[in-house]
Image 1 (cartoon, rainbow, N blue to C red):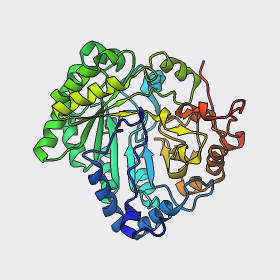
Image 2: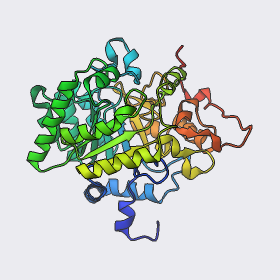
Image 3: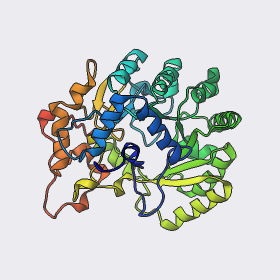
Image 4: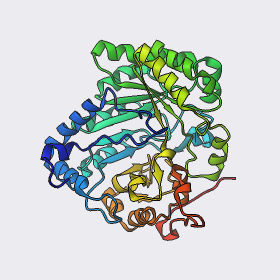
Length: 403
């Protein structure tokens, strides 16, 4: 990388965060990778500090416990509350669907200003971001004013209220992922409990028509494949077309949020081990006929312990900040009550460069994958009899296996 032309070094490569089913295409940014990388170049060209940090990141091995760069990506959980109680989500167990208070715009702005190395963020975590109303859109606008690529996820249930669909698109957000887990009312509402299927469908049409009127592509439909909707995958492609999507992703993973309880629950409904290449090919072919990019995501086929290059990249380039300003290892865990690296009420950089984060990285480098991280790894890559060790208590990792 050191001898590469600067323009190429800056651009880097798009990290798809998953390599599902061998050679099947993984989800791409909306509207395409070219646009994503063009925005990256703009972001780097307009901030010397960000450019210097990114060059340091790109030239590093990204496999050291002691890093000499700031993170280039962060996830911000603006709210930890939701109006749905989805069957595969830990939020469904929270009292009134709420864990903590919302992140304030002032704290968000402080973190964005402090973390000058950011080129990309996600605003959403364990919750429905539009519940926060205007501060949510204000966060997006502020990040975009810094030329940071912004991705978000919504259940689309509130887009019709107070012109939320317009506010979201007009905020300048780069990608809006909308969760759709059933092709009819019965299936959708049985999985996404407390929802109204007709309202979500109507709102998806609303935001997609608005995008079309503005001449932009911002949305992607996202389906978590499971026993309850596997029979409808082809119908979901049809529904995607009906609602005006041009891109959709099928996630083959059901996460465990770092707990034994949720591993048992979601193992009972997952279909990732039985999903076939033929099914995927049929869905992609149907999508192509309808003008929809159909892609697939599966994290467990990516990470392994037999080679540093197969390790999860999160500890070395990214983190998740909860609504109550606590640092979580990644979005798969998402809950600081399960695993917490530190808090950022004062300075995130102190956490990023600190002892706890260094020990967390070192555990990965040694193959001593923390318990909360193991569901994303193919543990079959470990030598026989090589037992996994949890990260040390000194790293303040709280592992709560709910009964």
